Structure formats: C-alpha cells, structure tokens
Image (tube, rainbow, N blue to C red; front, side):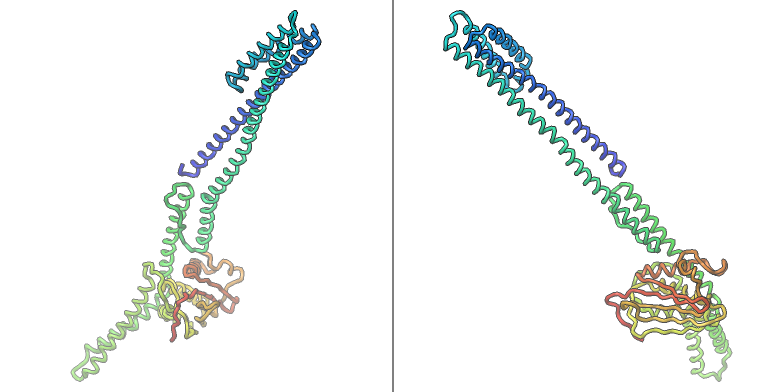
Length: 472
C-alpha cells in the first residue's frame, strides 16, 4: 500500500468494486421496476373487470336482464381470479388486513347479487347494499393502483439516483486521481526536472522531500540525492586534481622562488660562520635578520601553496577580492616571468566585499591565468581588472593578447573535457571547473574573443546587501 503500484492496484480494485455495486443496484432496481410495471398492468385489469362488473350490475338492477346476469357472473369470477393471482402483491402493498376486507366485500357482493336476481328480489335495500359493496370493490382496486404507482415512482427515483451517484463518484474519482497524480507524481517529477537542470549546470543541490514515504518516487529521489552527493564529491576531487595540475604547471617558477631565499640563507649563514673577530655585533645582527627575512619569504611561498592545495571544503565567508587576486598572482609570478608575460592590474579602490570560498575563487583565477599564459606562447600582456559590474555587482575581467578562440568553439568552451589544445597540453576541465565555481557562488561568467587578438573572460559575482566597501 505504500508503493505507487500498490496504491494503483488498491485504487482500481476499489473502483471496480464500486462500479460493480452500482451496476448490481441499477440492475436490481431496473428489474424491480419492470416487475412493478407488469404488476400495475394486472391491477389495471382487476379495476377494469370490477368496472365491467358494475356496468352489468346496473343493467341487472334496472332491467332485470338475464344476459347481463350471465356477464356479471363471468366478470365476478374474473375478479376473483384476478384477486387470487394478485393476493401476495396486494398483501405486500396494503398489509394483511385489507385483502380480508376485499374478500369479505366480494363475498357480500355475490350474496346480494344472488338475492337481487332471485324470485321476489328487487328490494331497494338489497340494491343499495349491492351498489355500496360494488363501490367498495372499485375503491379498493383504485387504491391498489394508486399505491402501486407510488411504489413505481419511488423505484424510478431510485433508478435515477444511481446514474447521479455514478456521476458524483466519477467527479470524486477524477479529483482523487488528479490530486494523487499532482502531489504524488507530477510535483516530485518537477522537482527532479529542476534538480537535473541544476546538475547540468554543475550545481549539485539535493532535493528536499518527505523521507517518511516509501513509494517509488521517494526511492528515485533518494537515489538522485545519492548521485548528487557523489557528483559533488567527485567535483571536489576534480577541483583538487586541477589544483595539483596547476601546481605542476608552474613548478619551475615555484622552485625558482624557493631557491632564491634558500640560497640567500645559505650564503648569509656561510658568511656568518666565516666571520672573524673584526665583524661587529651590528653586522652579525644584520646577517641574522637577513636569514630570518629569507626564511619568512620561503615560508610564505610554502604557506601559499598549502592554502591553495588544501582539501577541506571551506564554508562561505566574507572575502576581499583584492586578497584573492594578490594570492593568485603571488603563486604564478615566476611562471609569468619565465614565459615573458606582463601583468597589468586595474583594481578599483572602492570594491565591496563578497561571500564565498577563497580557495575556490583562487582556483578559478589560476585556471583563467594559466589558460591566458598558454594562449601566449611568445609572451604578451594579461590585464586583470576588478570593479563594479551591472546592478552593483562585482566584476572581474581577465584579458590576454593571445591567439583567441575560434567562433565554432565558443559555444562549447565551458563543456567538461572539451579542449582545443593538444592531448599533452590540457584535459578540457579547467574552464568547466571555473564555470562550476562561479555558479556555486551565484555568479555568471562570459567570454569574448577576437581570433588572433586575444580573449577576455568576465566573472560577475553577487554582492550581499551588507557588503562592506574596502579601500586601498
């Protein structure tokens, strides 16, 4: 009964049972109505025979006609036969006492009729009694017809009520079906459709639904939520793998950045060891300060790498986009120098803070910058602009002077695994991850490119109502 299949089976079984009961009632009432109509025809025959009997009664009383007497006796017999054939029906209509009265009236009528036509008959008192008993017979036959017609009318009403009840049942049935289909099937299917569209946009949001239900739709939604959780987990793993791949891309620059402070530390330490008595305490202190400075420099490089590659999933927090930009540029500044690429920053002084995940936004900028670097194999300029966008939002533009993107590739640029690079240069996941990160932050990303002249990626992020303005 908890499953949709079980509900449908029970529902249609109930419908068939109700339809069967209504059909049986209709058949029984129609059959009963048919019998009542046949019975009232026999009651009409009884009344007609009684009326014919009374017509000959007049001829006998007024004219002493022998032929009329024969006809009267014949009709009297027919009335008796009619009554005997209808006795059970008459009892069902009038009860057990009325037939006895009719039998008594019929017997009295016969006796009075015999006395009237006997020699010396014709007593006015006998004739008066004969007419009174005849009238009682007529009244009884008319009463039977009246009661029978009333019963036929009631039976007809019952027959007519059944189609009306069927219509009401169909209306209720249609309402129940529509409500069941709407709430039990269509509504959760619409939720699934909406959630599937979000998955297509790489937004993995589970569906909130009644967990106490045990039908097929609930199981389907539970499976969908499980799939979404798995996809979300895989997406985080994918982002992490892209972080490691990005680190591998600019490893040489990072090694160079670490090598410089380590060499300075080594040289200063050797000089400190070889110092003689003529070295003043001020010079020794200066060399020690230099060692500490270079150590902090190397430590900062390692710290930036650890923060960039961390695997935990940070929650949304208040972020200054300048900090994201500065951290990102500090990671790849040596890579930029190695590839002969110049960075031009244009950061507005009155940028509002936003809500987001610093590491994810840093990952998005790293992917865009690495794409820009790969688009300029002979060097060039990357312009990084941050300012106010449409409707007060925050807008970040990453522009390069590289090869650009072909028009036929623009529609699929954010598709997973789509790439215009050779097999050893890219997997086609970088821009897909950027798109997902931006969408997760409630923003949008657009791209404009001129083939052979360069490309601009524009990220627009929402600003909370209480977003504070930061100034340099």
